[in-house]
Image 1 (cartoon, helix red, strand yellow):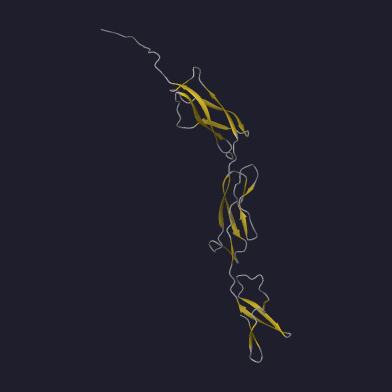
Image 2 (cartoon, rainbow, N blue to C red; image 1 turned 45 degrees about the vertical axis):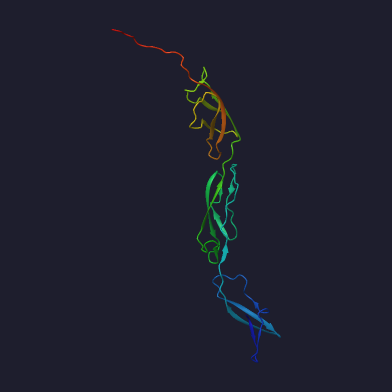
Length: 219
């Protein structure tokens, strides 16, 4: 409340008419502001105590849906209120950026109301392998249920990548025609694995004959 005091001892509330002449750009260290009021060609000023609170800044958030494509990605964007390091990367994976308040005298983080640097986790997802063609070598005479899983190799990959293919663990040949799961793992960690199925025909092993070796003796 600003009150004008006249030389006859009378007073008037002039709060709505008074001006704070240095109220712009206040900082936490400021303890006073200058208030002025003019009337009838007379201008007077006075100082008023003031408490300036630090401006609260939202902690930056990580960008979403970033996918590896060989170009640089920005996971956390800097603003006028804070700088960011560790926010640019090319490789797929988990990354960590550090945000620092630009003005630690007059700003604080909104969540903790302090000025400690913030670590923001961000990520670039692996690119997808769109197709893989495999070849399976079946031994002459066919596959029997007693055999191990046959040899499987890569014929082609899109995009063109090197890598390895193998049967998923825990599979065994079952009599008849059945699909079996395989997985291609790229050598380049920036690409995800690719899975597929391959149908195999296995024959149930049956007794065929007996063979005797050595000499049979009787007494």
